[in-house]
Image (cartoon, rainbow, N blue to C red; front, side, top):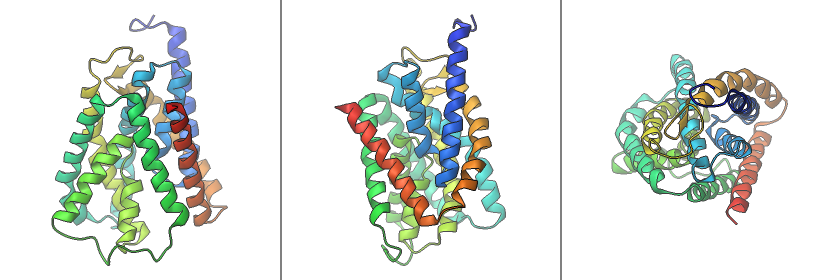
Length: 275
C-alpha cells in the first residue's frame, strides 16, 4: 500500500497516464495545437478505462489538462518572447478580464455535472471544427482587434470558455487574432502567454472546486491529478516532436483539416456518451 492505495492499482493508473501522454503528445505534435484540446478527450478516455467515477471524470480531465498547460506554456512563451513575436500590450490589457473569466468558469464548473461539461466541450469543439472546415483566408472581422471595452470582453470570453474546455486559449485566440488581420505567427506566440494567464488561476480554481469531492483517484488535489501532470508532461513532450516530424510531410491546410476532423470525432464521441 502507498498512501492507502494498493500498489498494483497505482501501477495500472500510472501506466495508463503515461500512455495518455504518449497519445496526446503525438497528436498535439501532428496537429500543431497546444495540447489542451487533445489532452482533455485523451485523459477522459483513460479515466473512463480506469473506472473513475463518471460524476467527476470530466472535471478531472479538465483540471489535470490545465495543470499540464502551466509548465508547457511557460517554456513556449519564453521561446516566442525571445523572438519578439508576442503582443505584450494585448496580454497586459487581457490579464484582468481573462482571470475574471477563469474565475467565473471555475465557479460554474464546480456546479455543472460531468455530462454538462462534456456537452459544453462538444458544442464548442464542433463550432471550431465547422469554422476550420469552411473558413477562407480572406475572412475578416476588422483591420485590427478593437480597443476599449470590446477588447476586454473578448479576453473575458476567452478565459471563460477556455477554462470550461480545459485548454490554454490558443484555439480561440488564434481564431480571433487572425480574423482581425494579425499574422498567424503572432497569434500563436501571444497564445503561449495567454495559456499561462489562463492555466494558473484555472488550475487553482479546479483544485478548490473539487477539494471535498468523493471518489477522487490517487494523488489528486481536488479536480487536478498531480500524478497525471508528472507523468503526462515528460511523455507528451518526448513524443510531440515525432508528431511534428510527421506533420512536416503534409500541408498546413491538411493539418487544419486533420484537427477539425479530430474535434468532430471527439464532439460526436461526447454527444453519444450523453445519449
